Length: 127
Image (cartoon, rainbow, N blue to C red; front, side):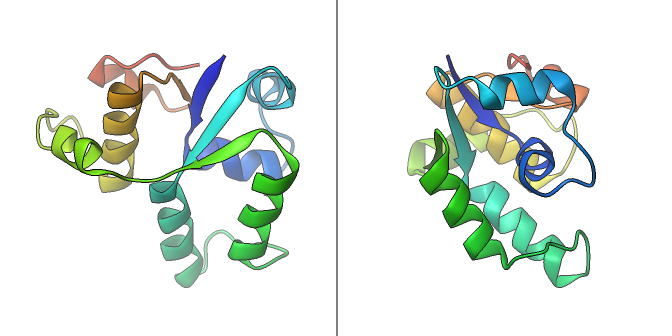
């Protein structure tokens, strides 16, 4: 299976604050799955770290780089097709990072691994 991790699913899997939800852990630990982390999520984490939430035991770049090197998580860049798809989305909410994840999910045909039910408002599959 191929799937896109939302920011929280990635953070739970690598940094806590506790163990990730069981369904998320099952998806992440399955070596048959190809998982993607959007560069938008890395950007979101950097912004949140700059305002003090969350705190990480290691620098963000080291954390992400290690996870990409040791798991089946691949970095998903943002391309023109993704940005164009954002313009077509209804305004269910205004979080620019989540809207980019919805666009990438739609364009790349990837379900999103997330506990956030707001993604379903956009008609994307949520795991």
